Image (cartoon, rainbow, N blue to C red; front, side, top):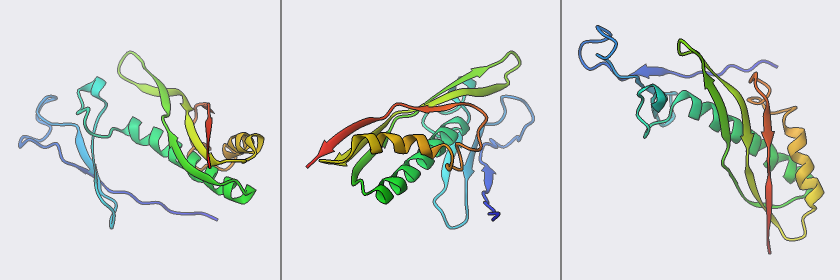
Length: 155
């Protein structure tokens, strides 16, 4: 079944002179999906962007991590594992070639999963192996995605 996704990108970087010169404008925009809170963005700080704003690379890495998390929670629930907390600090490795073209070479997810005491650690680990076959974002990128989970238990 096909699904359609929509977004609206609105350039906010016109300082009054438009693109009359390379330094005459800012590389800022809003992701403004109707009915949702806007995300204020800028390009990568390596390219002169605002480090306080999300950039496309941040958004892609975050989407990859969030998709993995959502599938993990789903599969854990199906397996009878009780997850009480989940946090990830993913790391993307990128390269920029001469001329400015860039790409991701790889991404590593570092999920920190807190499980209810007594959970089956083998099952909790194996769930990560299944996600790459179903995660919409992971199946859409052309670079390897790996994971290094940590597990913690709570009463």
